[in-house]
Amino acid sequence: MIGLDVGTSFIIASSYDGDDIVFKDFRDAFYVIKPNTPIAAKMVEKGLKEKIFIKDENGSFIILGKDAIEKAVERNETARRPMHKGVVSVKEKEAKRVLAYILKEVVGKASKKGEKLVFCIPAQPVDQEDEDFDVGYHEDVVKTILSEVGYDARSVNEAEALCYAELEDTDYTGIGISCGAGMTNVCVMLNGEPTIVFSTTKSGDWIDRMSAVATGEPDSVVQVEKEGGGFTIGEPNDNPVLSAVASYYERLIEYTAKQLSAALSGHKSLPKFKDPIRIVVAGGTSQADGYVDKLNEKLLEAEFALPIEVVKHAEDPLHSVAKGCLIAASILE
Amino acid sequence: MESSVIIIICSLLCSHIIFFSAGIFLGFMIPKGYSQEVSRAPVSFLKSQKEKDNHKIQIDDKKVVLNVSTDGLEKKFDKITEEKKTKNNISNSVNKLKSMKGK
Image (tube, rainbow over all chains, first blue to last red):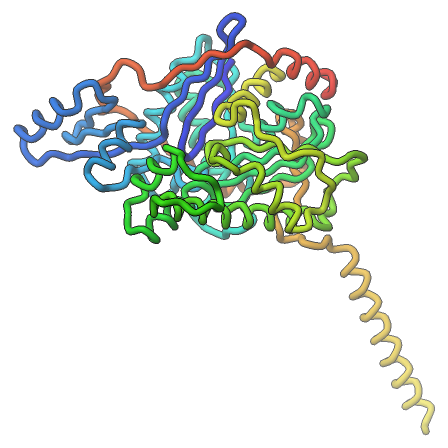
């Protein structure tokens, strides 16, 4: 069985290997080079030796993963993504084809027909009414692709999967916040049952976009600088890109805390927790220095509706959702 | 004042009271935040796997997923992913969740 985190920035598969769990990480990005002449095509292919790429029948080269970001940065451009804000783009035809190729390569063929696979999907956002945002369509596209390679694929909410992975100690009671690149997903869980799920469409990509506008750099350059670290959220930095990133991070966390407080305040499905609750945070965007402390601070400022026991970072923030998906797949067996 | 005028005034007043009461009743019956996604109670992953009894006749107007062909793409690499292994520490979680869900 397989767990699969289909994210905007990373696609991560999880599976058992004897006494171990194996995570297979893929950087969700691609970059297309279309040479104009056969000689240029040969030169490009030679230059791509050792890189991960596919050759399209129309003569173009599609570079995949980390190599795509490197190549885009080299050319002062921005790498493309097969997904946008947590879902496959409805309009982008090429993106869907690339996503299909990537997913099939990451999970491989099912070991037997009907092998169980659980993948994550985002919740409906509270801050966007967009025709392009269609979770149902995204789910169907991913299911179709995975069924072509023999899987019985089911979906689970992203933050629900995070709760399965991280809230065992509290009998699966608490709040999971998955801070991805495209979205922030939230699940309030009581004894293993999700009571409230929602998402916001502002997360890591928003920081990249806003910092790129502020500094005049391409998004990919900002993304690479941001992932290199060397900044603390809310603190000034000598590097102008990192300084912008640190500022926008603080604004993002404040926005997320306010959305969370507003969504839960007076919600009719909000359980009456008998103890202060645990909030667990995961996802690539949460890995920045000071994220968890700042979130705790902003939740208190936003007069969060529930008493908080602790705001905790997941043990392995990048793999928590994939782990939760594998747990969900294991329960189905 | 003629008795017919009094009757008309009384019936008008009664009808106003009836419509006002009906309005209040409907206001309580329709759930608050009806149009907001966030107010919908989510369905647990495991519950959603069970067959649903759906007696309503509805047309499926979801977007159709057409075949996403990956033909014509020539592979030029050995391995697409980076692998990381960790100790299997999820069997307790699986067992606990199974017992909580009564599986």
